[in-house]
Image 1 (cartoon, rainbow, N blue to C red):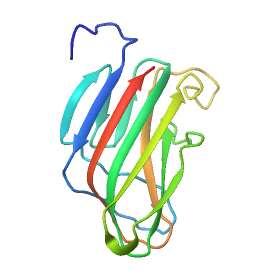
Image 2 (image 1 turned 45 degrees about the horizontal axis):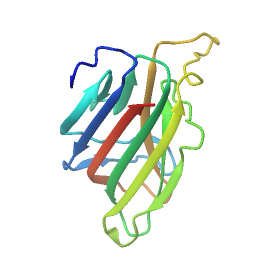
Image 3 (image 1 turned 135 degrees about the vertical axis):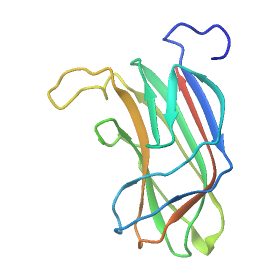
Image 4 (image 1 turned 120 degrees about the vertical axis):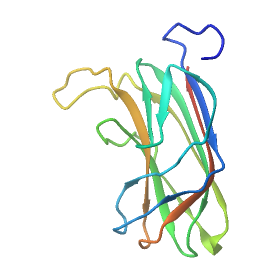
Length: 159
């Protein structure tokens, strides 16, 4: 914890990595969890990121700024989709973006959203939940070749 932020309404987090992470695809054009292993944590308060399931978890409702920046390396002609989903694997509206890895070079991609978790915390029975989490998902639209993340950063701030 940084400072004296015992107030649960104050939420922020910053993770980064220069460690290679690979997402493999068994089926073309099918969403998979984006595999990122964050090796370093800069500042964190009342939010967590779990490397084992690539999930960002909060315990308070509110409006959050989420910024995921990755440097990707894929195959010559691959086209990918990247999006955020909530704890029920429901798409976060407006979060889906597409990118290419032409020439097998490194390509920096950023997905930044302002998300109101008051509207994403309703379970399948219509009841409110205290489970606030999101994760990034990716798909290869062209084939089943893997996608590498060579470095990444994640910033989360409750605004």
